[in-house]
Length: 322
Image 1 (cartoon, rainbow, N blue to C red):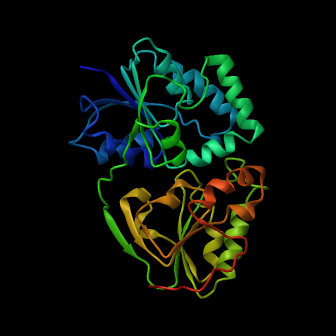
Image 2: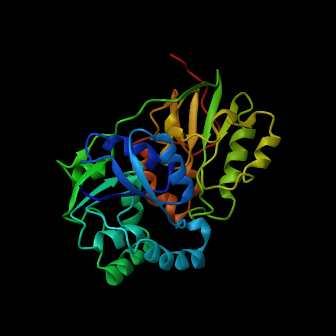
Image 3: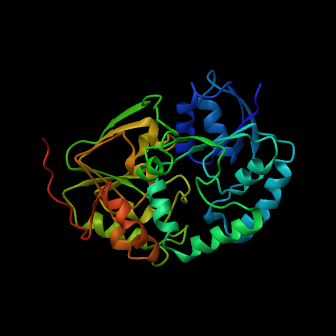
């Protein structure tokens, strides 16, 4: 029996594992990642996959540079006895993935795309901080970049860039099906937030709050429903609810966006992969990233324009239902 190890950290990665049900040679998987990811994934696939679990500290930017540095040593220690014949990873360049892929047992790698490879390649090709990080990882660990490993046999993705780079290795995204249907009614807008400030991708701290507040106040005829990113503080957007036409999407706080079918007039966000969810049944999807005007947002506008309509003004167009 082959040892299969799967690394992830977001609700989207939980969803994408379902696409591998008929691909993996066994349903026995060692699941690694933050505790909330492990708990939700194990709960969702009870009876489909048989999981062992290794809890890793979170490595995303909002935890801070010092904690992330300390976490790297912890990850090495926690993975010391984990061997992967097949590595399923949501990020080839994450410390956990590098450690496992460098082990002599690793013969095959499958990559899960959260839905934003097009955005990732756009920003990594332009922004100096990503270029320096890539060079640093290459020097320290010998990793030469995304999709460069010859052991990659499959990529679960809908990314145009990935399809061009890895023809013949694309695995289709298969959905388990929606758990809940939500109808928001006429003149409704679902807001998909992004941790821009936490990831240092905004022009100044809290910029996304200002943009969203202006959007809500300038469109009084619309009712806005906030769907918050799972890595943002619960109280981050509390001030927006002072507006009479804005409320939190109460029915699905603890469910990943991939489990929801939401009917609304519009969907609005920045560049979160959740904005591309098939379950958003709307007339149009708008990105606000053009209003951010940070180096990061400018680097991804071209790839975003292929998916969404870019708003340069906070006034939404009138609804035009068909």
